[in-house]
Figure 1: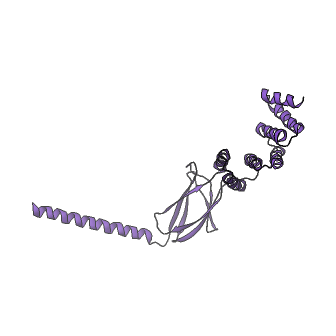
Figure 2: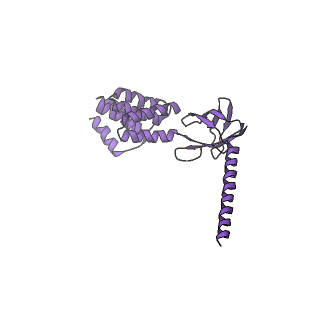
Figure 3: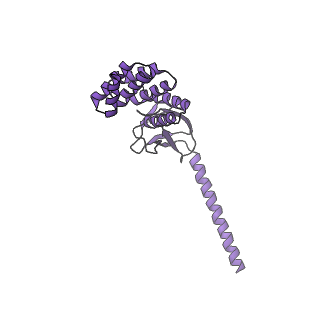
Length: 226
């Protein structure tokens, strides 16, 4: 029995030695190659795949991600590559990638304007003003004309005590063709309570009532007319 047991141990040792050698050989084969595909996947901050993202490799190879957020650059030698990711409504992203194994997959996250706006709103609610201003600058780069971004910009101007600037920004949103009751009542608030201009406040309350009737806004409008 002892001889048989020793034989089994020797056989197992030989098996694991061969297995380790095979694994090492496979690992070496993955690391030593002339050319291989660079594979990657792009997600947003809600962990959803980002389709139709423009991906540039070293500024010259250009492809787009598929419906599942995947991309592949075929026949690439090992080395360090510069990658650029761009999609409308998202923050552009640039990074360096060290390609040294066939088995590598590059996972990338892109920040959407939607998520940035949510973070600005939260930072503003929590009164984290510096964070809100930093996020706002990033949102402006993505879409400088977005009315929600401008409304948040006016909110931060108001926090800094710049009531005239806040009113100017909100008027600009309306002049661009975007009419919203929230903006109108915000303008009324600024003119009535910050700039002591009840006539201008009444003007924006009237515009509000033209869009929709509201008992509280109606009462406020009539009180200003007295």
